[in-house]
Length: 109
Image 1 (cartoon, rainbow, N blue to C red):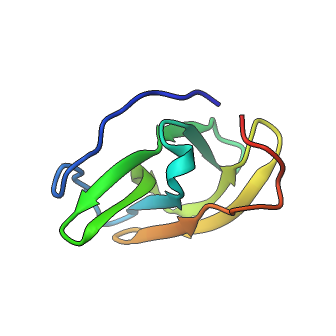
Image 2 (image 1 turned 90 degrees about the vertical axis):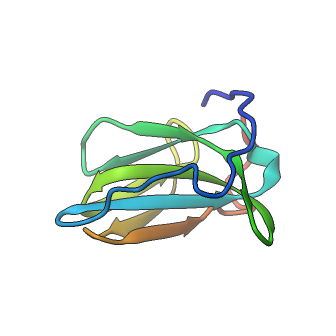
């Protein structure tokens, strides 16, 4: 896993193109994962990653990784190179949401 020092994103800075067979995924995490890249994959396809960033909204802020433009399917969210954190179903025209586990997988790198 890689880490980056991204600043917060403000309301309206993430645009998702949903429809047909295209959906999106949001992985919600705690602030302790800020900057960490979380990988996902569908079936045996190549993994893609997104960095956890602070997302500022009208009522406060939260931390998440956003995966736009995903083909429908079952995705594995990866804890590390070998360990899945869980799976999530992405449907066309919808935003799937996954809560990052807070414990049970060991230390993060």
